Length: 261
Image (cartoon, rainbow, N blue to C red):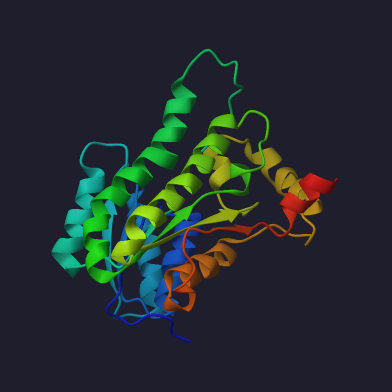
């Protein structure tokens, strides 16, 4: 069932893998035919594009390759999207990262890197998109985490950045609701993507790591990129047109186990 008209335009950051990649495909499945996808890896972005075209060969997929932290990349995403499609309806701030580091690490590099990607770039891109989202009465979905409210050792900066992203979402709601813009965040639990490999976890411990988390999750499995994609697409659709300022937890019950066990 289609949830969107084919005139809608969506921007997705971190679209070259994992949740971003799966969400791009899910948007096409549900009727979106105009996508602006950004990511650092040009080859992986192209694969996302081809996956979208496999669903609908008539989809128009703009690829904007670059590191969000680099000068001019956020501005270029918006400019190229407007130049090609003339509007922006949905922004999915998905790009994120973590660095394992204890609080007593004397360097501030981990803090600055994590906050730059997880929060600052989301704020920057949102600010650039808001004038166009006002015109379309569009909406924003921010990718937060169950760890925004459930701290874990050696990932304080990740947890802090995601908590701040949730608050940023609510601030958008208060300031931009009068302009017809909705904003919500999602809080996924354990989702099996290449995220942990990119954090530097050795390959030989990746599967035991996932297996241990499967045992901890009440549903007995970890999430998938498609699980999260379904939620993002729903929140961005008119099916959720009175859902605004929410942080939607999607963790298979993991946070409940942390509290009670």
